[in-house]
Length: 358
Image 1 (cartoon, rainbow, N blue to C red):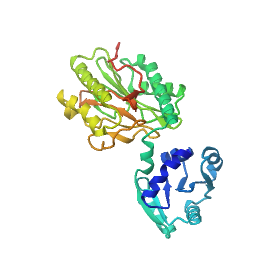
Image 2 (cartoon, helix red, strand yellow):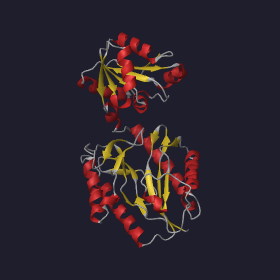
Image 3 (cartoon, rainbow, N blue to C red):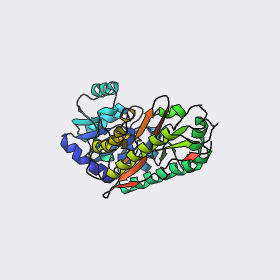
Image 4 (spheres, rainbow, N blue to C red):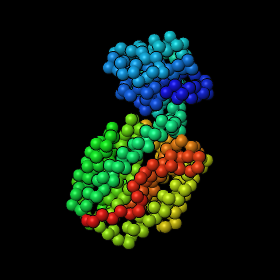
């Protein structure tokens, strides 16, 4: 964790500010290793100070070895005011995207001698490039999720409900070592597969359905994310054509990933193929996103906000989709590491269309 704190120091010089107040839980964990649900970090050029209440003092001492752990008592603001005074902080940056207007007002009122400087994306920028330990954890998270999916795949048959299958998938992932889900599982069948975020429902699968599975788990705090679309019984020519279009777009985007191109560039590779097949209006979301402590983080592979150049060590999803409202949809998603040579694909299940007996 010390290396991550050191990497943060140049951002303080750009202000210039005397320190950074970290309140976002994922950023707090990234910088300190502390996994508790409450606490704030004040980072200065001299070190990091973690303020926690009585529930977490022992845990923080054990987990945040590179920080000075300080008990805050029952109230945060008096303890924070004392700390800022002791450290001589006059200008303090804070994470504007993670603070309510109400909380900011309380800070200004309680600690008027400090100038509060709003910042965005300071720690998130560091989090985009994963170190070796982070990559190993994400690889394991992806492997657990894929093993669970492969285990329940033969049970995807007509008559079963989406909710039953989602429950089986979650239970299996937990049994294999998942801490929990990265997000509510998406199991969307038939006409519901046209819902990009169609959470599992009580609908029973029918012969001829396409079923979209978007699944991810948490392991040691880090997330995985993958999508596969499978068929229950023979899907028919139109569904196969759409599936092959999405697969071609996904493979082309994977081939284009390497350090240098922006997320916009990679999104365009997939989007051009889908546009060329006549389904441009049916692909309404970005191609992918970063994955780490959060299941959706920077960088973005997107036509809207994909201006970040890719770097080795980034972990992103590649997930084109085609959605025909009221009929069906197809999405295929891999989780990949950007490498110096291109990509390391972390998602194992086949991308050839799996057709289960109904």
